[in-house]
Image (cartoon, rainbow, N blue to C red; front, side, top):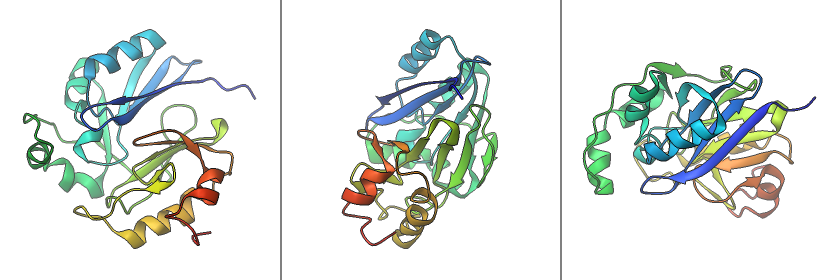
Length: 213
């Protein structure tokens, strides 16, 4: 079956979060994942792809993954989705701004809640609850396209830190072992920061996950 997915992933914001635009060429609809800054750039990317944004979805509620969400919500009149377990982090936006030494931003509450195994609105994707980096961390799996958006759970030869509020090292290990490493080894992984990788490479070369499979 030929894929109808169209995707752009690119770094945005003060910490270089990988924002992804994932669209379906058959419907012309797309979702924006983790708009962590540079709203004008994200808007231009969507225009160049000739897509209509239907949702903004977040892998977790660290500010570098949602800094532009309020502006984009207003620009597109769309809903913001987050796992409810990260609401306490989302609402700590002023504290997060101070920690990153950036000007304070105003952020509306999320509109809707993501949950485990929830169907996404484009490309037959599903939401995987992968806690550990934060309690509400999720990943987005697109089986037809063999694509995983892993947020800050799994990076190229690294994993998300667990020493911040709500972090849990055992939980992130369980998430990687039980959810992510059950995916095909050829699955492309787009992490929250840094270069893309694949599940098979991480099983073989990631020093933080040895013994988890």
